[in-house]
Image (cartoon, rainbow, N blue to C red; front, side, top):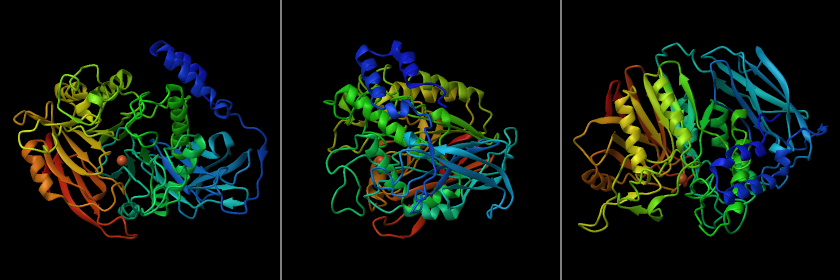
Length: 534
Ligand SMILES: [Fe+2]
């Protein structure tokens, strides 16, 4: 069933690893024997005493003729075995042209195995482009809710309009996922999630909600990560949004470990083998929880998540992974000046393979708009100095920590005349609109791209507009057009002539069912980089 084994993957990578890391990687693979031997055993026919579809349904990574349909049999989301037997279970799926499921177009049976936490990832093909479909699953006498999904428009077409939402950073303890309820009512074509889908920290007292799992320290084992994903996906607003339209997901750091960089942990005392075993567990639980294609099945501690897609010739999306292949943050992480260590050409957030892939995708792109969906802020924004005359500092965990690569990317877009580059970003729990230049410190150089940074769904709790802070940031940084510390998401409406980003603000996520309001809108005209307040 697996197209490439983790052992082969480890051997393939051996040339590029130190012997110490190779041994750590081998240890990580050996720690997951169940997954390495993922072969269906006897097929069980459990009669469920409680609904096995409590995590709902989802779809993702649509193509012109299909998509991934996802569910996971999980009658008891917060229990160690999730209420499931240690055997494979047959799951029937069906997809239809109408919500009542009477005009079925494809159906089949697949196996939900204990090795993959009884998750199901069905890759449907043979559908018509640019069409809405409905789907559901059946197992052990139970039937799932009906989900809605959509194929991409024909590759050679120029669609008149695309409407999609992007979101990130949904700390369950900090607030309610109110933004998703509002988003569902907007009926976007798809959702792009830029990471921090879960948070790996322990449960804390006195918050809006509380994490299940370890009382102290971060998640460690596959079981820990699975329960955390189950807890998050039990949220009704999040679940309903997954059932509403397909998602494109990528991760940031908290799906695994705060501010990690490739094989380098946040806590530098961690043993490398232990760290990679943990990474394998976190990545596997992520794959199990998300509507991802089989190309994303992890191989030990590796999972290739970066990928691209085209919405006809209107927009091409490159969805990046700036965590798995990056070099360690320079200057010991934290806010530091753009010194020689930050400008070192050896620093990279993408790694060579992903960078080459990105460049070649952009050269071949037929998209009127070229979207780079990624994690950390690309605008080289100097923070407000704590004292007058203090040195300007930048975040070393964001693109300024790989300033050489960051400037080379922007120069590439400019030199190769990549049409209308638009960067989408998450990570920092605040809204930003940035006009990107090759070097953002040089205010009178041409703007080459526009960056829309979306705030968190809930991380950080109740936010604020922070207008005084915006003024100070703009005094230091020619690129900053907008900033706020509210919660929410961004809704984008794209036509051949214009890009529009609507910043939706959830005013108080610490209260259930709070209001969501349109705070600001910015547009970019095709052929003219830079955001204009609408
Ligand atoms: Fe976050």
